[in-house]
Image 1 (cartoon, helix red, strand yellow):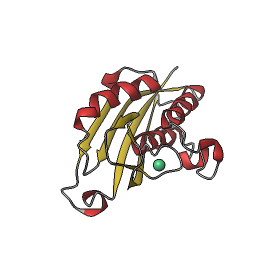
Image 2 (cartoon, rainbow, N blue to C red; image 1 turned 90 degrees about the vertical axis):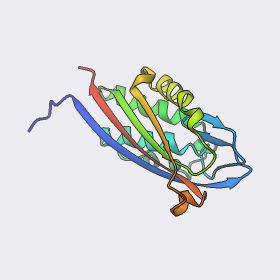
Image 3 (cartoon, helix red, strand yellow; image 1 turned 135 degrees about the vertical axis):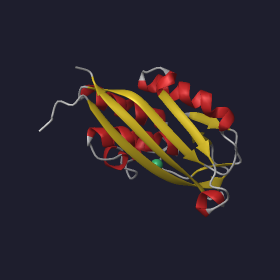
Image 4 (cartoon, rainbow, N blue to C red; image 1 turned 120 degrees about the horizontal axis):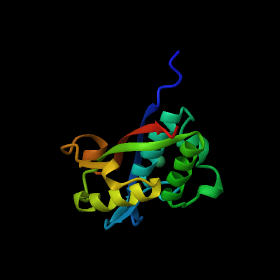
Length: 164
Ligand code: MG
């Protein structure tokens, strides 16, 4: 049994529906948009997927287990606080985030201009340099619920490295 391999990888996936009149938070950044994400928290679907990737690498369950959406403590919470807590869980288990890669599927608005700010924001919360955080934006060519602009889907991968 190779229990001393100094790396752990995890993946995360999340979807939120959009609705008019809500603020849109994505990748820790406020996006100028007529719609935002329906959620118990601030609805930052990119951070939620990233949290799940890190929790997956730790084999510590998922974001719903740690921050239940029926718990008033997390109502409307800034998802950056959830990511900070998850990063702290990793550190307390002896791991640090080596890098993360996030793919955001959203039909509108165009989020490409926000990507650099997302990278620096997420890296800052994780305590790592922005060159270790990748954010990629895509549409789904008008196919499916993303293509109909009904919601946003995000996939994230995180690699953890042992602090030892
Ligand atoms: Mg979510």
